[in-house]
Length: 198
Image (cartoon, rainbow, N blue to C red; front, side, top):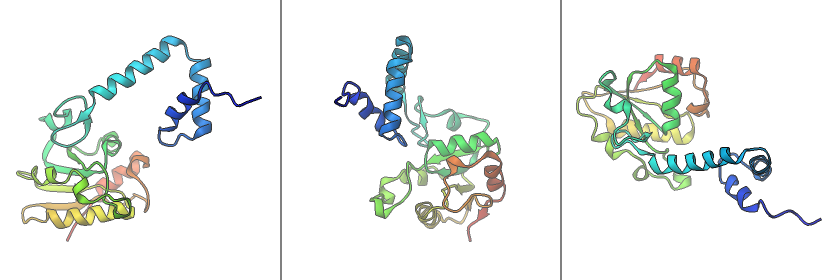
């Protein structure tokens, strides 16, 4: 029997998701076609389109939001004298779950990686420098990977100012690990034990 081709387009689309290989994509495709009621499929399709159209990056910090200025940046209850610099929105969500940080964020949109052709110019760094009026501390919360370390060192160098404390999260994060996969207790310890750059 020849290979069945009728799901190829759906499988190819699902394979574009991170971590989804051909077999997983086929399993998802068969589940959608055989098991999901049509109204659930329609709802999923509508939500995907609506979310993709409505999501944007906060004009201030760069986090994914459906608002021009996100709720964190516009909050009067947050500490506007602290900015934590992170790779992406997933890192913000992981840190927010700890309930241990009440400052602002700045999302870089990636990490410096010359091997991958990502330079400082490709990241959301210029707007960070423009946000420093009235800020007392910048907390660098990049992962302990070569790209994360390179990015942190670059930020420490360009942000050095007399009035500004530059600290890094430290204790508890494993070398080579990404923030989004770390449990809440480990993140809490890392935030509590951040180190000030010399």
